[in-house]
Length: 183
Length: 311
Image (cartoon, rainbow over all chains, first blue to last red):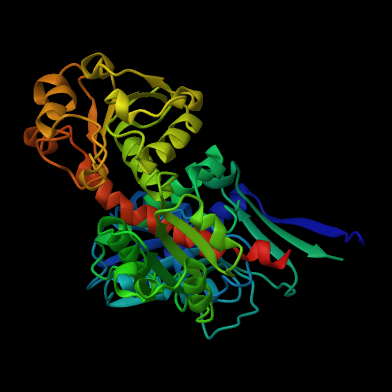
């Protein structure tokens, strides 16, 4: 086997991630124009801590109490026949009605758009939200479906074969945004 | 992690496999409480429910699990099929196989029958009870119920009482509870306890009141009235007097003890009505967990089987 050399580069560290997330949160607040009828639903697994962080910031800075849910899209995926083993379920927990609310889906990395397609199917099984929006921490391009984010923390130019990973303290022990590219 | 392709018995599973199934089932349970009780995970998969012995609970539980995961199900029971016309098990299976199913859920009176058909089918085989051998999904739903009520299995004192010899539920439960670190005692009339059962790592105590002492979990087995051609005890009344779980006897167990039963219960035979309906009874939780466990097993086997095929 030919050993491929992988170039590993840290794009953002803890403070960079915090700054981008603050900007993203502010954008959400401004777009909602002081309305309180919205809720955040994080996509398992790293979308969930991101959604919680956004909610905490909204409380801290704007004194808004926003509900947070968690969505597991593994039962809605379209790529089962191509992945080997059954994925680990982390569970869906949306402890509030989604009806009559704007639901902001939160995820770490937007790539092909297939996760979001699955998330939209999962959301409508829970009820009929007034509106669904999408907030992602990184948009790395290369969409395979007509899906667009409403809020983006960072747009990143990547090649299709690159690998982008957002590590978070809650799930991985530390905050770091990594771009891995094969030379 | 992958479970492999079939679920034939608890005997073949590791502690990690069992934990994966229980964790997956825990996450699946929420689906049953949604306004739309369905997810598309197994869309387009065909599951055949092949029951050569009567079953209401297990079969309807599997059927609901299949529907909640959007699989197609085909029901096949010996009473209404060509088995009555003399077709053999293997011929029946080979015929169904040409309809290209992705999984078989099978119950049959012969131990090892599920293992036998794995050699003739492409899809997964899930044992829903083969003779007195195993009934793995029952042991798994019991385990999920125990874990929810007790937190863990380590050093847990479990008593299983009743017709040990005829029970596949017991065999699967002994394998599972031992693997998970629990302490298992069996009880029942000596005529219903198979010789050498201690070799499975369990204790045997034929005095029910002694056996109940300090137990955290008391699992009562159904007296299989339909299998009583051989007389194993004098009368149902006498059985209840000696081995029936009453409120008074239950006090001998740990004060936070739970009472389980795989169903269907014979009230006034295995246990008094008041015990079946008491706050210690988790019998209906077991039924509810049955659907989640079967959803988890179907999902893990049907989505995890690809590995084996491609290798």
